[in-house]
Length: 337
Picture 1 (cartoon, rainbow, N blue to C red):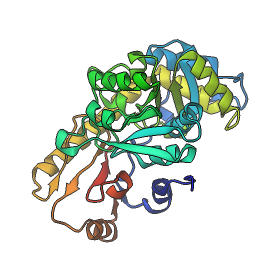
Picture 2: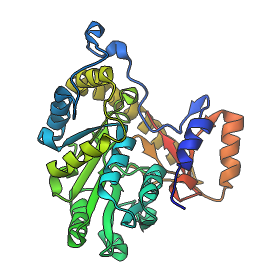
Picture 3: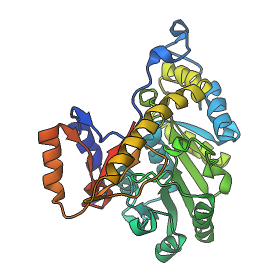
Picture 4: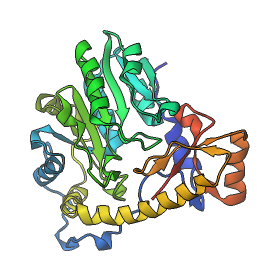
């Protein structure tokens, strides 16, 4: 039976709340009072058709593309849903990394029963290995899905790794969907978006995770203009007109993104330092550590994971994401920020 729900999102909405919520993966909320914007200029309705032109231009400028490449969406999750809806037909084969964000797998499973996985191995630092993709790709493959930064480990995939996957996709007429929602947490020498690596690449992202602007639901897809137009028309079925006040505020946020990013970096730098010091003191916890990102994916050694998670919640009022949502039940994901 075709998938109709996300087990992780159900858990996150109903069971992750606690005094110390380390299950969330985004930077703490950016206060509206710190955004340079005259709230008296907010309007309920505005000139939005297939995109709000100032927002289209701002997203395009941020990513170094023409506005015709940009499809606005309600956050990265909706961007991923819309991208998959436009790229997949019933029965198409999808390859998705493991471990990965459960909602990506659940969404793909909504469109096709033919979802296959390829490994990002912990012993290799969760690097993308094109040989793992080559091992499972077939002429039926139409989409390959990866995250960069990797969710849950925050490991950065470099250009060569992604281009190698793109070469494999091109050979069978497939696309590569790269979820880049965490990429801007690489604060120094931030890589360019993989949309620049070739026409087979499709990119999703948003202002939600790294900037503390989740409530704006400012997400986007970057795709070749013909594909972008197809996504806009398909989006007519899902949500024809977005909330115009959120679009106005998103334009303001994009105009002041360096200051918003600097605030987030100060928070994340402190949290990275604390987590590194903690892990260095532990003998029963192991983790691939990245200098970037908002998440870490430790593994417990010789410990009953369920007992640990229950005790963490009941005795210490602390929640982390169980590793079962990432296909690795002996791990758990910690959120920073």
